[in-house]
Image 1 (cartoon, one colour):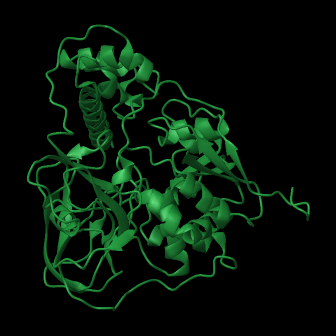
Image 2 (image 1 turned 180 degrees about the vertical axis):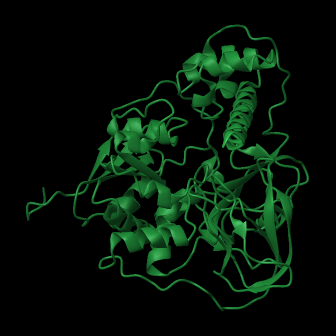
Length: 463
């Protein structure tokens, strides 16, 4: 309690540890002390209509159209979807299918940019006096989605079903992926935006308790959050988490902060929680106070394969080649480029792929950092079982997938796999366990989609 009898913000250490987890080398020293830098406006942006989880946005522009920074160019394509806005002024050169970092294809607007200060933002709102419905509509209109994972639309998170109530708003500041420091820098340099975003979200969610989760290896970020939230009213705690990968996983962070277990196949709101990434919270503040849609983000360009690691503020749609050039270019002996980090990132070969709302990092690795190996037969050592934070049997699932027994993998809970990579990282036989889990999940999703389509067609035929 403070002197007036109100609840005072405090910092606590988490006493809850989830099953499994691993300790990779983090290499965050390459970029953690690099202040955020804005990239010069590229001549071309490739703005995908699928920068979020769910249905792609419906493109609203055509070749030859002039667009203004902040203009709506893609309208959300369903309940689980998000709007897409122009990241700069310019002329639409084409609208075409473009490949994303994960391998899928989606429509993208190829924009020839123009140097201009003109914007088409929404009117700023006073969050203190605005109705919560108007704040929620603003988050939806601005195309805000999760910026640290799959890109789940934030407006959906902030509007739980009538029978659910958010008791805890959890800010995910763990950033446990090796090499990446974008969220760390946002906490250091934009703590005021983070606080404003929290105040807005707390109002929309009817005043839940707030837990700001940060790993213990980020003392500067903890101090910045303590200063920013020192005089905030209400039940707010900074929870210092033990350094353990994947501490930033949504379900595991919920357990580590409030000791609640999200049911199998369930969402955090099932246990009264909403989790948002630090960058997303700052973007919500911008959307409300400035009327600015989500058109740019901080991305870490790092690794021993890039000449000058940086934390880069870049428009969504910036090509990887432009990001790397801004960081001094790739070294001659670069062996691998990852969209994301080494644990959950995707290996990319085409540097024409562009950044999206969820691009947290580009990691360039040399031969020195890329482990060369040959896979061997499973030795049934159980290491992956001990490492798996979801308490699965990764070895059995992986062997089943290699035998094309997807049904076995499904029975053994492969759909609960979060693809964190802990199993592959710890495997002494160097087996591609995580990739096999991804294959199984993709196969199951395809089967389910076909079954739904067949059922819908049969129902339509009967009617």
